[in-house]
Amino acid sequence: MEFQSNQPASAGMQRPGARRTAAFFDLDKTIIATSSAFAYGREFMHNGLISHAEAVQMSLAKASYVMVGQSSEQMDATRDHLAALVSGWEVEEVLRIADEALHHVVTPAIYSEARELIRFHRSAGHDIVIVSASASQLVRPIAEELGIDDIVATELEIVDGHFTGEILTYLKGPAKPEAMMKLAAERGYDMESSYAYSDSATDIPMLEAVGNPVAVNPDRAMKKAALEKGWEIRTFKDPVPLFQMPGAREIGIGAGVLAGIVAVAAGGIWAAGRGRTRAS
View 1 (tube, rainbow, N blue to C red):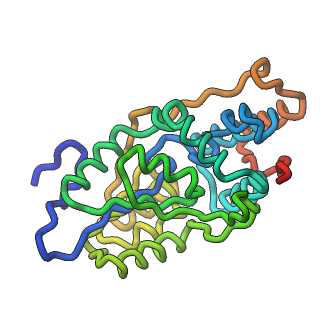
View 2 (cartoon, rainbow, N blue to C red):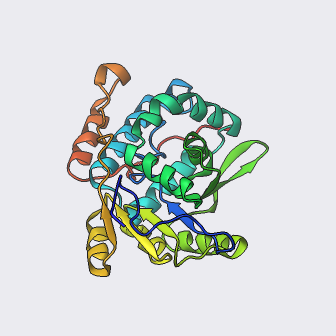
């Protein structure tokens, strides 16, 4: 069939009695043009959960992530930093902030091409699942905005309504296809007819788990793998992932933080410096 409207060329309506088809989507830089883990930094600051300096760090981390992405080691460092940062935070407060800030923080960053692709898979009768390394509390509101019921995401330990700083499940690398295959076994997905979309080389195992892998806005290593394996490559451009650097007047950047800006511009990442944690 002729390829139209950025839809998968091989997709079609599910036939009655056929095994189910799923479309698995990574979130950051695949559905949204930013990092869901870093997007709420300013909102957390305004609500007293983090300091001005920590908000700057998160803004710089988001800028660096948008520009150059993160290696596997940097993702692990970010995971540890953020887990320590949220220790003691009240879960309901985080959910409230994420919900209130969604439409001016995240919604404008959703790629229109991703929305269109999600609509296509829905119209084809495919199950749609977001598979993300971000915490489920941040992924769920975005999924709901997109009309997606199913997410598989990183899970943080919660005790007495507060985050402890411990990570129960980290959805990165091989953990993603493991979660996908578990869902397939439970729901009867035909993985050979299913789809997976991601930008990052850390998600190569995720794309290898399906018969229709698609590299979206691929980083260098993902693009190399996609070309070698003959995978489809797509570029989502709307919205263009622009970012605004925080102003010194707005959040009082000191000399040490300015030095951090220079480090990030030189290719550093926010894993340096552990940041304060808020006592429970």
